Image (cartoon, rainbow, N blue to C red):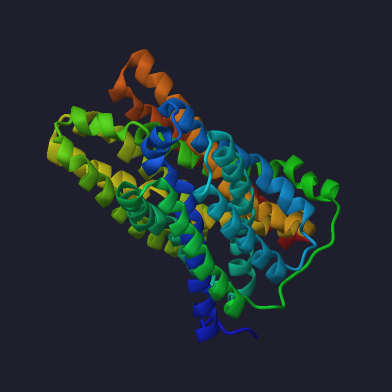
Length: 399
């Protein structure tokens, strides 16, 4: 019987995978902080430079499940090391890009590598840990993204302001090298390998249970981003001085670290059952901002609670998608592991678009209760999934 305790080797692997997601997250998100420098250096508009962000997200969402399906039979250790090596090369090529077309091409290639590496990191964390500690391990791996936003992006932005945007990509190249060395020495060699056709893999996406599970995190992230996309104008409307906004955003990111820790706790027992009520609390927090937005102190507390609720869903939904795949299509767990990151990108895009529509049609303050309604929809889907799980369990016991 496998022990539920984490060994030194387990912790080394968790730290290595967290380092990898930190590096990947920094490379993905830092572009937002250096867009102005890029547009100025390459002589283009900020709007055109912004397509570097949308192209990355779109490529990530489309390519990740396709590549994961096509490469499910690859040896995971060798494949991950190859991809980290490709990540290093593509970031180095971004650093020496002299035109928009060059930079866009290498960012698209980086997006493909990033999506696949994130999915593989989640699979390795799920496969190699004791069952009782999978939630903790996954929450740490997701924590790399949180730290990327809180620490990696600000550092990358400062480096760009001091030495130019090219230096930021040199920084992510060096960080990629550190992640490669750590992975080379720590990644286990005996990891699962499944041979399955792409058709069999994608049959998973026609399963109603998987589709329901996919839209739970999509709506959860969407609820947050209906509001978060317009957090700066909300803060200005609350009377926040311009010099304080960067500090408030930093504190928002810092609070999300605790959200990530709580996500692991939620995933440790009956995660889908707990998430039903997590989304309802998230809805209350978002809707209450409609009233607290007019009170600076209360508004800041409310925004802090919004950050605390923002990523509580990550670990639970990641594990849930993998576990459902094991039941309905065991050969497609790799594809299932890629769906949560894809769902988050879909949710971010959907939430931002919905927030923009509400903002321009009926006013900024109304994004708050609209975000709350989206969170209620996420809760309803979670209630449905939980009900179906209980129904299946009852059938299993009756046989």
